Image 1 (cartoon, rainbow, N blue to C red):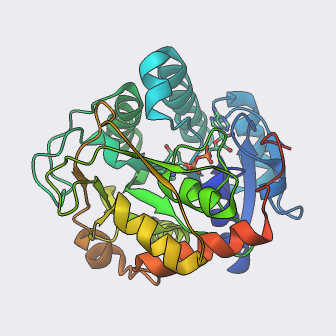
Image 2: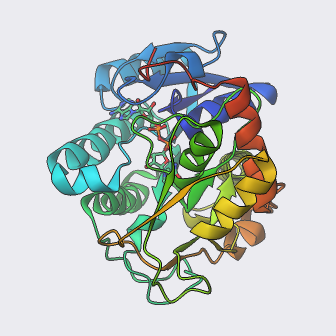
Length: 331
Ligand SMILES: NC(=O)c1ccc[n+]([C@@H]2O[C@H](COP(=O)([O-])OP(=O)(O)OC[C@H]3O[C@@H](n4cnc5c(N)ncnc54)[C@H](O)[C@@H]3O)[C@@H](O)[C@H]2O)c1
């Protein structure tokens, strides 16, 4: 039996494929390479270049690889782009998920782990944010994910599709083989490290007047291995016949933008120039998970809870792969 990993050529999915294979589990990867990198998928893993919502292709993969479960990472994930081009986000993230879940149900697959996001909550009313927090996303990206959550709930009730929807906060860090390479890169940590490498002249800090100790925005960073370990645990939960769940994935601890930059200076031993800019519209001051449900329900414990080890692994990967997966992104 195999696990179908959609979006397995992306940042988080590539580490999932690495970890599943390390455990001796069989995987099959489906990615259209719109944002991913062929080089991020190990050559031994069966790979299909195509859309997650290609029903015929999904049916064929399920049959040929005896797929028992799907981990659905495939999505577009730029908040700003979702505001300027919402059609792209609803069609790709929601439309493709509708087709994918339909094909899976039709083919008899009843276990799904879904990449959701803290963006499903919108502007936080309480921090740390619990799973029961009201959901009113602040952008089309968040809505596209929230609507997939509602779809999964309905498919559970009607078709017995069991799922774990994992709401990630900020994924960061790397393994020796796989790291973060988005184009364009909007995430703080890879940009801070690019500045340390001299590939960027400076790092922009958006907003210094937030109600936080140093005035810069506070975020919850979770190591990519810890994040994917939770997926392995979620799969086990479903295999044991566990019920469908929504679970935050974060460390429950926040770090400000300036703390990240200071720690990166220490870890890399390099100077990192900073440029102060105005706030970006829609950026909340704090985004920190209440993270006890994953521990309680999945028995999950983070192995890299501190910012320093998250940054160290990301820096090691960057130094070994100065161009990421190569110039130009996919390939
Ligand atoms: N990186 C984070 O901090 C973060 C936080 C919250 C949620 N997420 C979610 O986690 C998932 C993975 O994020 P990531 O950072 O690895 O992104 P990524 O862009 O690196 O990976 C996404 C992959 O999905 C592929 N893809 C996109 N649409 C597709 C489609 N219709 N069919 C097939 N393949 C498709 C892309 O080519 C890419 O390889 C996404 O669903 C994202 O929304 C990420």
